[in-house]
Image (cartoon, rainbow, N blue to C red):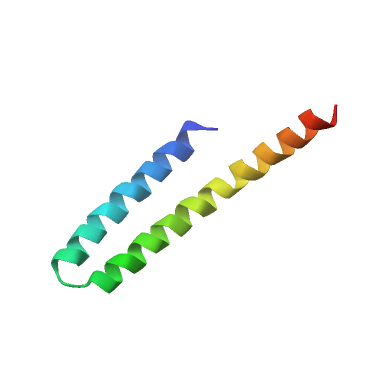
Length: 64
């Protein structure tokens, strides 16, 4: 796994935390929840290619 993926995930986490805090304090709790869910979805989309590579590697190792 490349270090850029970790940095991107950290950036998304920081951005979501800031937006969530701002929206919660302004009384927009429903929008804050949507932002949090969108952040989780974005991170999962970033990790999907890494997961596919992991499963392909495990498949080739277990085939002998």
